Amino acid sequence: MKSNLHLANESDSAAPAKVTLQENAAHAPANMLGALSDLPAPIHELAELFTARGQELSLVGGPVRDDMCGRIPHDWELATSARPDETEQILKNWAGTVWTMGKEFGTIGAHKHGLNVEVTTYRSDEYQSDSRKPAVQFGDTLEGDLSRRDFTVNAMALRLPDLTLVDPHQGITDLVSGQLRTPVSPEPSFDDDPLRMMRAASFASQLDLDVTMPVMAAMENMASRIEIVSPERIRVELENLMLGVNHRKGLERMVYSGLAALGPPAVANMRSPVVAHGHPKDVYELN
Image 1 (cartoon, rainbow, N blue to C red):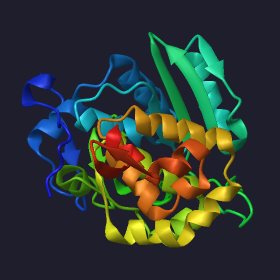
Image 2 (cartoon, rainbow, N blue to C red):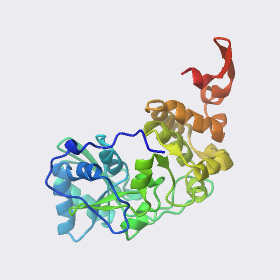
Image 3 (cartoon, rainbow, N blue to C red):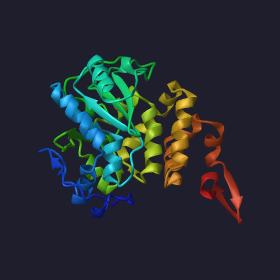
Image 4 (cartoon, rainbow, N blue to C red):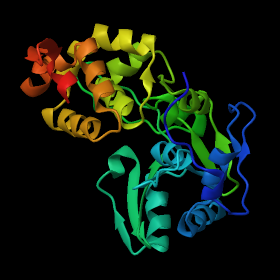
């Protein structure tokens, strides 16, 4: 099934820079690559600073996905081989405003010319069964860092400054075909971080993607794991879901997986039958 998601138009970018595909990357339509070539100048400037220090820097996750879909990224997420202390030093030389509250997780943030950037050291995390907070371990490769991401459409990266697209888990194919998969088996992914089950429903709404059967099966079997996630984090994902382009699809994923029954009462009662115009309907069918 082809996605209803808007992909960037060929006219969206007229930049001369050209994005190249890593050997194992899925084929990407030219218009998607064209959108990635037109990055803000400060991002290129920052990449040169990391390169000059002998460190890698890549645009990762949501900004890559959004740029390829013709959506404007709100924040710029980057990954680096540099350790947090060196990242902090580079960002202080680049930007007027730097924040370090995420430093223990390898993340340093900065603001320059209207752009918010967060640069995180490559990670290889381990989780305890009673917590979704990882024991952070810094990694050595971009590919290893991408394998820990929640979904394949978020496990793509653009190496800077040479603009090489890295897609080891075929996220481009999933984005074009309109499906949501995990980079690894969904069970260990959701066991590590149960919030990812809520994010699956949220992305189904935001990006109008179809959650694959293995992912749905894992959500159904592991729905009770959501109980270790704080209500605040669940609320954020629910708000994102309701603001998406297909919130009914997202709500259905919650209902059918059993997540809705474990969520806030307003969501748990979504499948309560009501009568509308003489026909019984679930509550969310009226929205």
